[in-house]
Image (cartoon, rainbow, N blue to C red; front, side, top):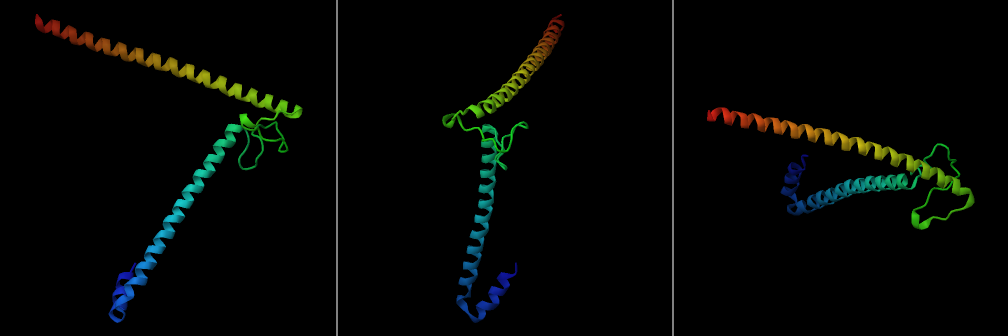
Length: 145
């Protein structure tokens, strides 16, 4: 923090002393910025791996399948373009499909409930708007008399 004072004292004896100070500050700043960028890139990479792992049905840290009934020795489910169905993995694929179907059903139920909620709220808003317009119209009629 006090490098400017030190630089002033050193420059009294060596007028070119500013060069090493500035070079040190620039290089140190460059290193710190690169470290910050590296941490951000690593975090984005980890999040991307977790998203891919969840999509294909295996735990990104352990490499094991997410289902509680599956063993750690089972192979993870591959992306659709790499699927190679073996007789033993067919039951694993069927179980994963059933899990996905259950999740999809839950999402459809939540979507239906959200749709009904939006319909109720919009009808209340329309009713409120109509009542307010009716009061304004009634006030205009009263003012005319």
